[in-house]
Length: 164
Image (cartoon, rainbow, N blue to C red; front, top):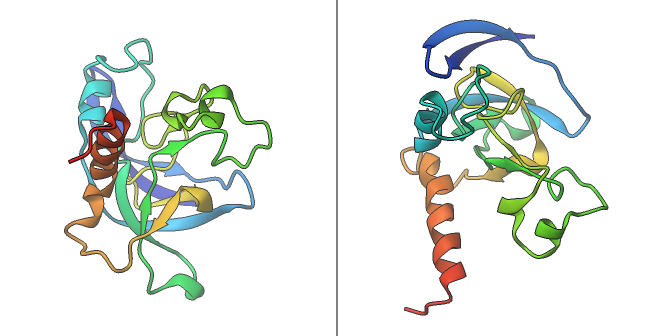
């Protein structure tokens, strides 16, 4: 299947192009993205201040919300969880970071929309592992793309152990 995507080439260009989609495993479902927002991560990847050695083109947009393309889920909205690590890939051999609850330090982590061939809201459609989807049906369309940055703030605050 082909879909339109916003291709970002670090320090060079941003262009709209057609890409081929391929399902990688049976856990993946086809998502039609409805909304996606630009994050500081895309800006940092573009200007090579994040992953500065990775000059490969990427498709950003990990703050994305869409719907699974099938009849059983047609009234449900899902947000893309931005990280795919050894826990969400259903491995039985978790790394030390995932075992200790520090999935953000997982050596196997891929950042959705920032690493090659990962799900992204800057496409019309994308195959996504079910484990990377969070049901946001009951949340406003205007607020749902902000769940990912809000969850980062909440997690960081929680790690400080300061009780308000």
